[in-house]
Length: 150
Image (cartoon, rainbow, N blue to C red; front, side, top):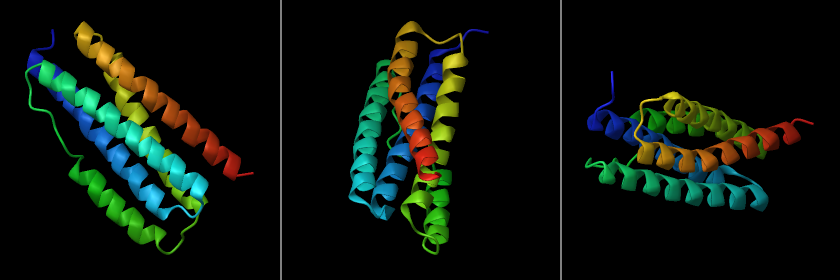
């Protein structure tokens, strides 16, 4: 069955929330990181994700919907738990591990959206543009995690 405009709005708004969650996660990671190298990297990724979220919000508006402007409650609760847990075991490796887990989550959400063959052309283009940033961030954090494990 073909997607309605509402389906497209819901799909993109879900990506908006996940992308905002990701930006929030990077901002938390920047606060938690010990080294300036990681603080700067996480801050840069947070800004990039805010930009991606803004582009996706514009797509929701183009579709006639009301764009989400915050992340999910679940992610906020997860961050609070992680902050509590990590306050006992801080360190850049722990922070990078948590960021990389978040990257796996956002990557999965975007892959699922991209696998949907019934998405309007302009909407698909917006998702693919956002995917470029998501994939880059995921791969960078995966490689960073691996480099810290040696």
